[in-house]
Length: 381
Image (cartoon, rainbow, N blue to C red):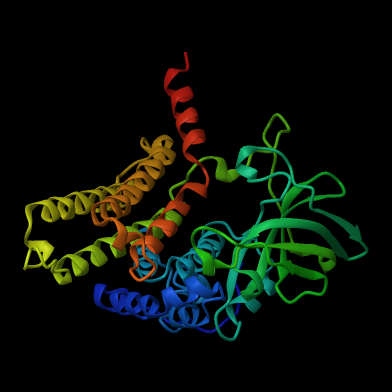
């Protein structure tokens, strides 16, 4: 499929340019965390830098960023504001999927690429009753055919992006028992938002519930996901793929932010009894070393998964995501544990970093599922 669009901006992916975007996001991250509002300024900063469309394929006029550059982008964004990074991760994954295996209707994808201003996209999949689709089951959200249109009805949960989304990619079952995604414009009639997001972390991600009531879209907006040879639908997110490391990357960014905050605090904190910065003590230097070790481990696993040649390690990708998550969480928890009360005060960023990094655990495949699948594979006769 060829979409006739203009050439999209090629982002500057140098370390210096990404650091500048990190700093811009960090300047507003605390404010948006407190208000829970859509992080408009952060989204606009990412858009101006050309990062929201970095993974658009070259055949569509995009930069065609690969997996490694994608995680570099998302690590930088996560270090600045992980709520913005999550919105970007979902959008970049959409373009990446289209680059690898085109499924969007040509006219719709052309409109997405021609969208004025930031164009956020997300797969809307979880449901209040079903939970995460990676755990199995089929959605209650359904579409029925009416002439040359689909009519969508249903209730979805954890729809990250909220009213800022330009397009929803809604997981549905059709009236003829097919499973797939429906590409729905964010401004379509019949979409109503329920302000349900009151979460520990990523508070500005606007991951609210959404209700679809008789939303109409063209027939070509449905993209079927084939069932297995046994006729059973298996969710693609139940196991990690080589292109699914965007979410872990943004939490590595959170760990990097916590490390930087620890360094600043240790250099500036001068207790009266000590008379010098706590950074000069062996205890704090050892803690800093442990934080750095955890960040280094997370980064090495992240890039190692992407750069390792061949496919022999692909069955272990879910385990690598688990280990990256563990390391990112450990880095932040180490900083918080060492500093005590100051780290738990909202006057300092540590408690926000801790709340945010804990959200890594919700992304599929989750730890228990990944470990069970790996053990089952390993112990199979």
